[in-house]
Picture 1 (cartoon, one colour):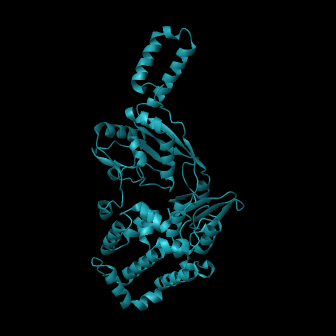
Picture 2 (cartoon, one colour; picture 1 turned 180 degrees about the horizontal axis):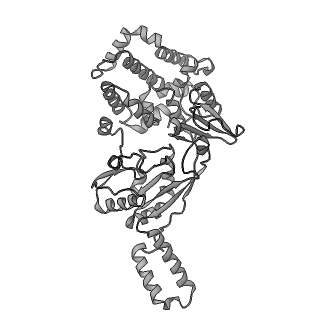
Picture 3 (cartoon, helix red, strand yellow; picture 1 turned 120 degrees about the horizontal axis):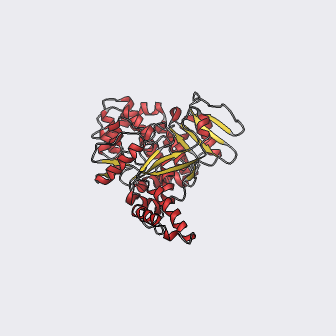
Amino acid sequence: MKRLYDNALIYGRLLTVTQPHLVERYNKALKAFGLPATVLERFDIDKTGFSPQIADELDDPNYLDPNGVNRRFIILTPAQSTLPVVHTCFSNTEALVYEFYNSNSRAIQALTIKDVIYGEIEDNVSTVRDVEDLLSIEQVEFKVLSADDVLGKAATLRSLVDRLKTEPEAWRDDAMLERMVDLAKVAGDIRENRLVPDQVVFRHDAFWASHFGGCYIFNDEKMTTVICDPDAPGFRRSRPWQVSYLSIRDQVRIFRFLAETGRLDPPRASWLETSGLLEHRAEMAIRALLRKSDPDADYSGMDAVWLQTWMHRNAGLINEEGTYPFLNAIKREIAQTGRVDIGRIPDRFRFLLARARPEHKDAWLVNRLITEFVPDDFVSRYVFNKQGFYADYTGYDDAFRQHVVETLKNTYLTDKAAFRKRLYGL
């Protein structure tokens, strides 16, 4: 993974913590979680406070996610709000934490001047034992604490201020006034600083969870749909009138579900001709075929001419595998008719023509699910399904790993937003 780290393809865009007072505050949060303090003087953190260096130090990548549910968080600065989440068991953790930052920005700003904010994103289950546990998660609540109890002291100061305002003789209580002064030294002027977060409960909507090999949950008005390994505990256990269960191996039913619920962009010329998705998938198919058929290939000199030469020499292999000629035939059909009759497309090729409907609220999750069925498209896997990409990457030989890194650097990393907009409409 060092090559990925050196090229900002893993643990990228993190915030480096070097200030001694922030390291001290981070240690206070670790101790509150029952974890040993770090001896590191420099480490990186993501939006939730997760640090890959501290995970290595503790030899525990799940130190903020010990049960794969009720994720812990450590907030040292409001600047974390713009960071990614680089380690999570739920695909929507980043969105939930972003909502928390966005809804409580003034409180976070005021609190982190003096203290560290930490806590858990709690739901109604403590462990995930089966699919039913995942289905029971409908909302989460941020349980917020601060190491020096600035939150508690602000609440106490507020109550004393109210007493001073309502009790005519309260101003004669010297002990109370002295206590208010001491509390104000910690909490500041609570009339100006909003120290208590306003919104801590958020809806837990459609998501992917890492449990049972990966489980997708989609919520519609009258039906919840679960997509995962049918051997997962609790699969098809109950509530068939409320929950539809689809095997992750059944791509025919999954495609039908996504199409019928309006989550897929129908394959039309209006976006296929301009997005370059067909050309991209064709190129990914050729690279995958090259890797599988020629393990000793030298990718260092690969360019358009080199690749075209290899394709001419291996035309029989390409035609036998079928993906590249299929995509070329679709390009011709789109140019002639402006659309594709998806009903006559062989099942194994349908997801090659698919992307999520960009305006749908589940677009990112749907694109992640699509990558399950186009694993040779390592670029799309990296964009939407990093856990899947990293698992694939460990199985590549060293030469292909370097090729993957160079490809991502020269395509996606050059302008991430423009790349996502062009290929996926996002």
